[in-house]
Amino acid sequence: MEPPVSAKAALLQALIAGESFGLELIDRVKERTDGKVNLGQGSVYPALRDLEREGLVKSHEGPPMPERGGRPRRYYKITAEGRKAAFEDRRIMGALAAFSPVKAT
Image (cartoon, rainbow, N blue to C red; front, top):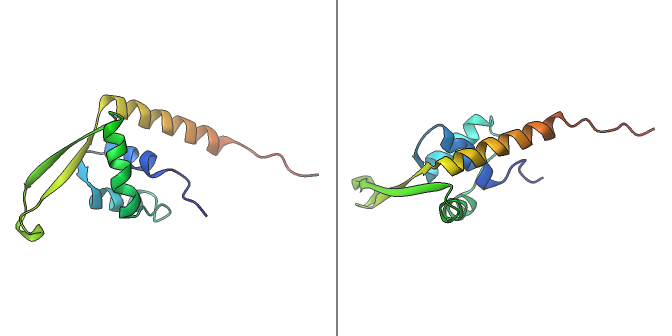
């Protein structure tokens, strides 16, 4: 079964809580959904790049980290436009959750 939300929508929701990097965002989504949404690195990083191209998030490199061989982490932060999109996603998901299917007779 497919996840109930797209990687992009889940990442926007996770970024409302604050700036973070990819692996931490994966953990944040998993934790906040009680393990129901598990994003893979193969979907997260392309989704973050798409969100940045769309102007919904901004990124920057952190300081070099010895434990990463001197490579910096890339941090992502939601923009005002991204926040609007995230709240619209919430509104839509809430409307879908309230949808009551008709019973078959």
